[in-house]
Length: 195
Image (tube, rainbow, N blue to C red):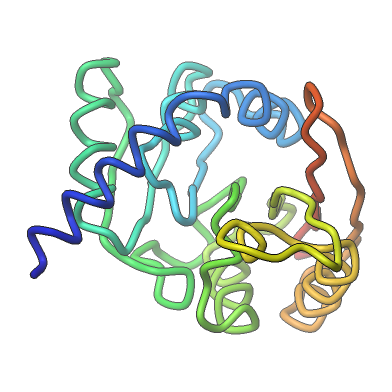
């Protein structure tokens, strides 16, 4: 049974590699990722954002609960030549990262999968260094969205709720915005960890 799930995750992961370059570049720019920045990608999937951070000279840990996604991320990242990259098993609610390690924590199109958003955001804060940036980025969906992809994103209201939870988890300067990359709208929750 696990083999079938891994194969499906791998197939889905390959579709995620294509078409996300522009939003990933936007997130890396917004987080000011450069040489020596420590980055944790929560729900890294096939590792596209991990590789972008690595290209910029960051030290990166990608975390994903799916064995198939981790395998794909490791394979693509090895081919890319990622030097300061680790791909770890874990979920937002239990991140395998030391306290205060990350300068940047991001979740790009993965927070809608978290089973406990409050626990996930507390974990993100735990691993964040003082002053670290948090970016939670999701496809913006309408309140009347339905069907298979309706759950794959946030409404504006859901983004505001997640921002409030981030504040309760100990983040400061929490803000939400909607951006458009190409023709695709995304909602972004940005925050900073104070000392």
